[in-house]
Image (cartoon, rainbow over all chains, first blue to last red; front, side, top):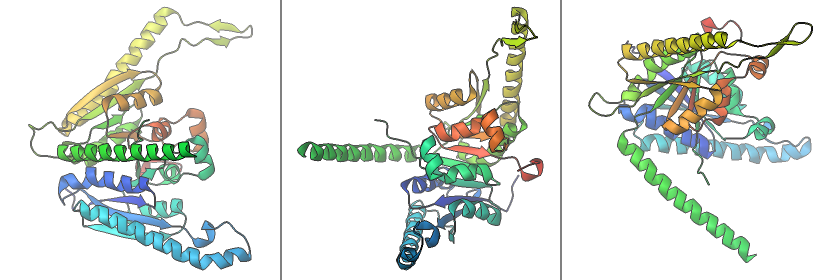
Length: 161
Length: 203
């Protein structure tokens, strides 16, 4: 079954260690062993939150902070993509598409899956317990339920104390 | 105050130590060539077999990773967890008379279950051999969620693959979801394979 069209794998990254670990793990297991002949095409996606939603303050206070917050978010996004790029090039994986899409991470990821006709979505996981998950929300949880493709949740192994 | 400083220093030392050992462990892994040990959980559902098929189709390269058959290639491990048959004591009838399952019935149910498990696992093994992948089969008994998570730890699995029935939130809460539980509690990365859209009737 040799298909010319490669399957698309979307890896979601954000500023956390967990997602960069997920990217690294995915590269190690799905791209590095194949030495540039991987059966997957890699798309690295960063969802940049809207400045307006990121700040919770209503009214005039928000308007003052918004511009600096916006530039902050842009800087973070650029840094995240840079780090992802570093990881990819250090593992000699060069055929990568990097994308930054603005919006809520959950929707951005699910939309990207549709857009790229991805067959696998890879996300990291903060390893929150049930309560934190309920309060903070979990992108990996949402994607596992709602994405239309297979979802791989990569966890950073906890150092046992 | 000094105790606080000492604690912080102690913690940072620990972190450094862990980082060092972590780095060493990573190096070792890289030398081994990243052959993945993949575990696929199968049950009677078609979705889990679809997950197995998907794994064979797409991850077979990751598992074997080299063309040399002599090297110890990664293994595909098929695990089936048989739910124990509880001799259910359900009060039936107006008087609340309990219904006890006679031992003979229990025996035959148990045999039937075992036969079922073997059939499932051998179907999976056949699929693997068709793709020329070495597989190891494992039949466990107990609560699927716990048994799978335990098996992962004991067998040092790199990736767990599960199917997903595509249950909605409510069904999930009532029927329970093994894939959900494993996604939260398994110590290794988990791949949830969903059946292609055409087969799912509801979202």
